[in-house]
Amino acid sequence: MTTLFDPLVSGDLSLANRIAMAPLTRNRSPRAVPTELTAAYYAQRASAGLLITEATAISHQGQGYAHVPGLYAPEQIAGWRKVTDAVHAAGGKIVVQMWHVGRISHTSLQPGGGAPVAPSAITAKAKTYIINPDGSGSFVPTSAPRALDIGELPGIVEDYRRAARAAIEAGFDGVEVHAANGYLIDQFLRSGSNHRTDAYGGSIENRARLLVEVMEAIVAEIGAGRTGIRISPVTPANDAADPAPAPLFKHVVEQLARWPLAYVHVIEGATGGARDFQQGDEPFDYAALKAAYTQAGGRAAWMVNNGYDRELAAAAVAEGRADLVAFGKAFISNPDLVRRLRENAPLNEWDSTTFYGGTEKGYLDYPALA
Ligand SMILES: Cc1cc2nc3c(=O)[nH]c(=O)nc-3n(C[C@H](O)[C@H](O)[C@H](O)COP(=O)(O)O)c2cc1C
Image 1 (spheres, protein in one colour):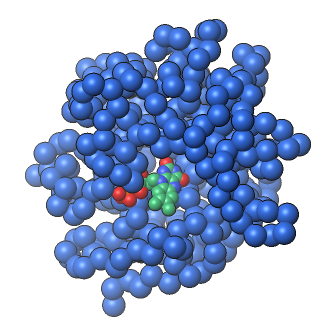
Image 2: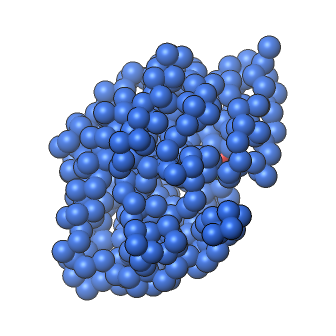
Image 3: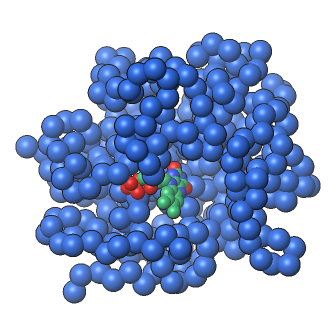
């Protein structure tokens, strides 16, 4: 019987165990540059089979929150190099989550103070976090976006390709394409945010076109075995909405089956909320999604996330419903989560007031077992 503590070869990744650290935005990168603190934070958690970084902007246009890191300027790549060196020195593996926020942004975060971009000019009912001119921070409604011209899309695909190359230069073991949680790629996928009438809107095939082109470009640049992807078929995060997620995500995973990827990462339910959250008329069938992927020839490791505890995670791996389980909040408060799960030791509670922003407190000071 497979356990959480068995190693796994996943694409080009050789992982010591089946426990991943989920991507977790911490807003501690001033001027979008990861720091020594970032390196210490990930190194503390290097016993995870795989660390997935916080979402990291592929371009200035892809930025949507204050103090989140980027992967498009030399100083950002140098900052990440410190992180990957520290993680590798501690024996870990780390991939970077590649992010374009689309409409989940604010004019003050955009190049030239312009409007954020989106598949269609529909403002999300969502908030973002900005720094005010006086230096204080606040949550504010996202700005009205403008619809991307079809002629701009090759440039966005090119930004992903360039960021994937930068990730390898920065020493990452691979990348995770953020296609979840209502950000740009997810905005294209879902009919609630995509009202386009060109080749990128309307049919499921058209709405998935940007995702497929981004994957093609990254796979060509760094290889499928170093490329993973995260999807969230039903989450309502950031005003993501689609009345028919089952056929949409069946098509998505059938497309993903074209490449021998590092992994496919699925958020089950509402991100950070109910695991049985539903969009449309029927409960979402995650086993059917995995079966559709396998039937289409997909062989990549299947990673699951959302509300997993020790028991649920062990059962998912033992019963073959998942190859890897990603833990989010438990990894914020337990740097030695793998050991604690192995020994069935109690977990530290997390402090949600220090999730976003700040310095060492709530970042580097959660204790490991003696
Ligand atoms: C503080 C915080 C930051 C997050 N940042 C990201 C992120 O950058 N990218 C992402 O895909 N999900 C992000 N998430 C969602 C988590 O990856 C994960 O899906 C969620 O916490 C559910 O897993 P859990 O129940 O194990 O915590 C974030 C969640 C939290 C609590």
